[in-house]
Image (cartoon, rainbow, N blue to C red; front, side):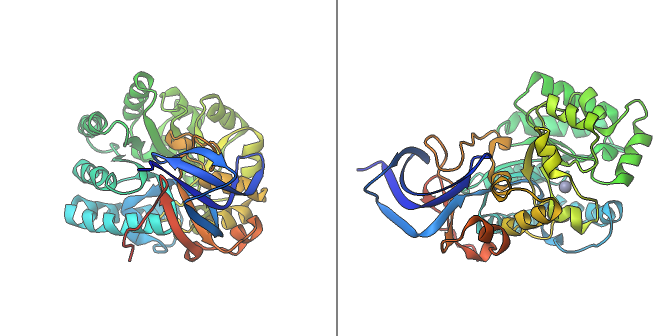
Length: 381
Ligand SMILES: [Zn+2]
């Protein structure tokens, strides 16, 4: 029996430097592209356009039902959200949401995700086990919020999740205002000993938030310095938003090899501000993209690229690269359809060029989604 499968299609992707648009045959074995060939194929997808699967590098599972709700700025909005997230103490409710959540990701062609969970360790355990049954690469963690609470208990719950699911979970101090300095130091010490651990958090999303951080952490000259000095910045740290970073702070992010995750839809929805994406890229900052649902209004990455363009004019292939990179989640990214890459891709209806993909397309024009070279045949209704 043949243990590999080959596809012919039009492949359109970006390696960060340029757009690549080619018709070719790829051969896939054990989910990985092993060969690019000229002739012969098992499956012909020539009437469609294949692009790499999307990577949503910043989104909140327990805000799934709040997309498009609760208008206001960040702090007003968070008041509602904290109550909403409390519902996930109920495992039954979390189970039901998980089913819709994974369907929504797949339908939107998002096969890679860095997900903030709720603060309930039991729920996080359930969710990690749930998602690993599906064709998705998800890193999901418990949100840590020990300010005004019990630092020791929060930390022990977090540690037990890390011990059980090292590869699939992350340390997630929600943002500086919801954690103590002691907690950040504990996280930093853990990261020093275990540098492969993912850290997800928010950074400099609004001016009010920055003012609050200044009041709460008087010994640090900036929000980013707080994160660096407590040790939580590493090359596996994904910083959501990062809108108001000074040059000094950008240098700190770069020096530590950390990521900025751009969430343009959410930034507009909450009127948080405009990130200077081009400036950051020119400075050599690694940037990924996040829907940030529920402050982001949906999981449509075509729309997200569009909004990112309206926010900051960039070459379109750079947007596609930002939307599809998976290296932030510890998965190699060789450009989408090169030898050695995972065959995780989306088939689009038609033969759009990159302009049409960014400005005219939406998720309803996804014909099919493939994970590790296999068609995803889930019933997604
Ligand atoms: Zn967020």
